[in-house]
Length: 202
Image (cartoon, rainbow, N blue to C red):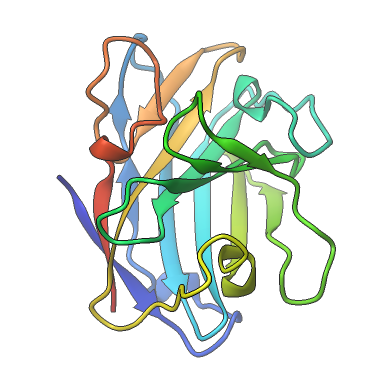
């Protein structure tokens, strides 16, 4: 199991050059492509920030609305279990248009899909950008949003969560399924919290 330390920052104005990088580099279920991705995770007193970047030449971005099947486009994803010892997890999936699929549950069959509400301090945002070699997404996940389902959520130094980061694109020019922690499944399936890695709040 891989481990990663989530850096504490003073505010949402983050210098990402100072945040450790994790490699999303486990290619499974298809032939390895030249597509690759990284992630950086940080937190402050109000939110978790997940910055994911993909190197991808043929970017596919069709969907523009919430709850669309964005994993069939070029997609970057962050999943995490907010309660230590509990395998229920949030999943955040976005394409380069910022079309975002958010859910909470135990697996892909039982997950509850969430539509984020436009309200101060409680909205999850997915800020995307195109780069010279691909694209990126910055997820801002306020604790107020997490507490809608997990009322007592409050990261503290040393707290541990299970998490995984993904790059996929089911219907892209080069279909691919890439993860930070390797998935123990014979067929494509990212919704396996038992295969998540460990993240520790600084």
